[in-house]
Image 1 (cartoon, rainbow, N blue to C red):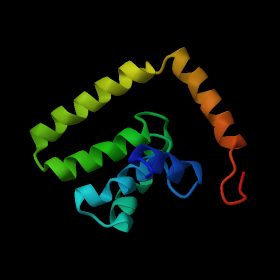
Image 2: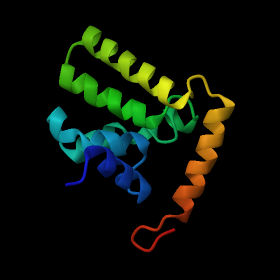
Image 3: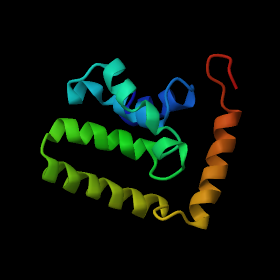
Image 4: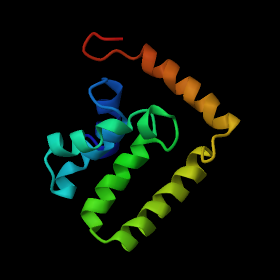
Length: 120
């Protein structure tokens, strides 16, 4: 059985979804929403907020799902803060550090080397 983490990564790797969509669509069933609806709602958040490489699109997708599942503004914001703090500890990327950019360059090279459905 494929984990949700691996499913989200595969959606992104194959180029079918942006970062926010890959996370949000993977958890759409938990949020009680159709993949197409949540995919459309998160379509503008690839490459960070509006392609400005700000907040990671995957985090935006997670925030959308959290908000829909929790359905309470205060509790959802607290849960999202925990996600952001955990992400910051893991990646050292909020704010953007040299380590983040090094990791991003390595990840981009890995993405370019992977093949999915015959596409580079």
